Length: 211
Image (cartoon, rainbow, N blue to C red; front, side, top):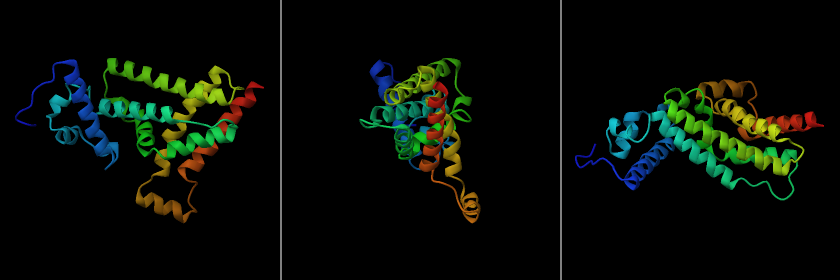
């Protein structure tokens, strides 16, 4: 920690410090998976003691959940399906754009098993509200292109996107040993292709059940 460290007191100072911590987290995530990044390393990157990082965030996990929320929101801000989009195009667009966002997919796959395990009730409530809003927003975007879906079905599909990414991303990014073994058995579809297939089937099934 810098000898000249001063605690941020004014709201704009707190916001600036939080922004600096999130920026450091993003820098580290560009170099290695979230599971390999410690609170100590994050604190050193931003020039603070661990205890001072915890003045601004509940925990190491809370920092990365904030990064996840930012990535999720940015993806939704940029998600476009085109003027005419059938079921396959909607599913394919979601899969293709997610495949381009390594960080978002990694954090989604780490959300439930890792990042939500060491946060306070207050932070959990706030984060889950934001996650629900993101899910609702995705459902609305999909329903605008697939009007056959009910609101409930659109929400179910949006939750399905999270579930499928959570499972498909780790499988598509195995260790070198597992990748070598899988290659000997003929390999597997790419993350984007496998996700697109799964989302198309989910979407088609939801539409069919409504008829």
